[in-house]
Length: 320
Ligand code: SF4
Ligand code: MG
Image (cartoon, rainbow, N blue to C red; front, side, top):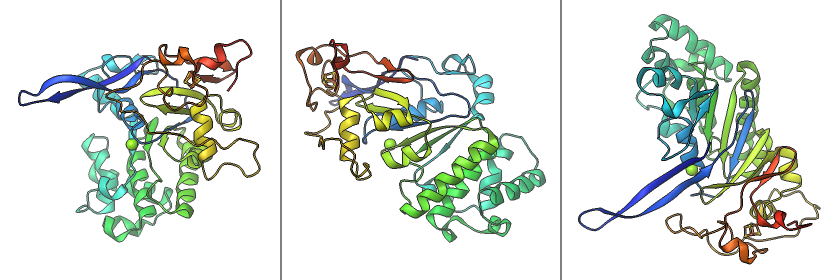
């Protein structure tokens, strides 16, 4: 609710604060139990920062993160540590996130032992169960990360994330480093696991096709703001925000034959240290109006379960 994350910009010998980067600027959304919410946007839009705040490895500057009616942002110490188990993360590069000196069995069992959930023998048995659940073999437990392919390492990363029986997994570009054929296998595995474990996912990616495959709902971020959010089919078939429309028309996976005018994004993404006033997209929007340069449009539900932040829809009969 109303999440902001501002980073100070320092300059000079005295490292005086000379400005701030608005990495996340007033973002609100919900994620239901058992739901996969995709978050898409170009690099630097703040989607990873958002994921890290949901994980509670970073504090928001303002706003609340509610989980099962508890305010995580107000929680400290033991209560927060107790809650952290509910959130796990799967990263883009499983090799970088796995300790290369540890055997796979230790890597998967580690969170169980660190959190005092299980003894060594129990944790080893659980690791054996988890490794087969993600499609690897029990004999793989004694091997090291470098002996595995990228896809296999991501299976290990997922097994490790599952060990503490989390409720929410934040996956940040979880398949982006993998070959396309392997991407589909990992996405399908994640979808199976979601059912088995009643998981919820926040699936962060720049890849629109991947997000479409796995998500129930999708949010689109631009320059630290959520500009559109909706049910997957509604959003992909009838994108409302001009930025989403441009993203989808530029996507190589845009449906062939779809009667969507090709709208190539013009210009660069402005710097989040010096974001445009008003609508963050106004410097690149083909529909820009005067009002867009001064007033930030609110995120408004325009169709059931589908909201966008764009002044076009405030005009009588307006549409993009
Ligand atoms: Fe374009 Fe204005 Fe809508 Fe922003 S508010 S997307 S500039 S029409
Ligand atoms: Mg990122």
